[in-house]
Amino acid sequence: MKAEMQNCEAAALVLRVRQGEQAAFSALLNMYEPLIAKRVGVFAAGLSHEDAEDLRQVALVAFYRAACGFDMAQSEVEFGLYAKICMDNAMVSHLRVLRRHEQTLPLLDSIGDAAAEDPAGRVMDEEATALLLSRIRGVLSPYEYRVWTLYVAGHRTGEIARLLQKPPHSVENAVYRIRQKLRAALGDLR
Image (cartoon, rainbow, N blue to C red; front, top):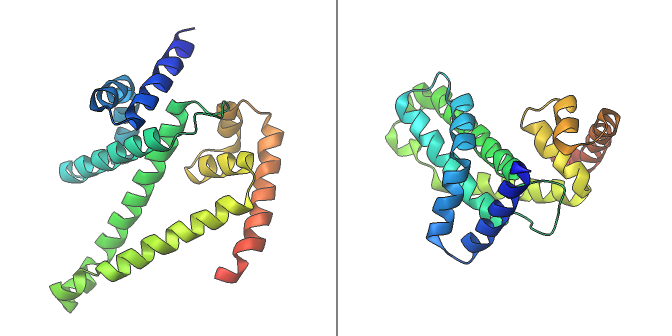
């Protein structure tokens, strides 16, 4: 009962956020602060204070984007789960960039500071990522896409089945289909 009330309240706040109400976003943020703090804590383990703060900012931006992009018409995934997935994906991406940066720092130091900043390369990477995600979304069914987003976020098939309230066998079959479809659709990108 309490979860249903929270879902209804979250849906109302999401609608108001989309209308540009700053107070609605503050209320939504306050409602989901424990989730945000928990997710950031999971990903920030072992990071410096500055990197952990950067990660929190990434999570907050992803949370705002989740509020703006949540599909209110569907009823299979609640806003909290959707926001969690969005934040997790954004933090994973940020950590990958951070690790890549740490690995290339010695090389960049030897090349010089001028080569360290490559805005054109960054834009090209972002465009390639957006194209890839668009292509993946176009190949997968809505159910397979939800399974895929949870799977790449690091959830096991049993967890995904529980989160989506589906039988584990259904999720395992979806993962198999996803692999087949992505191999066929993305094979030419290798």
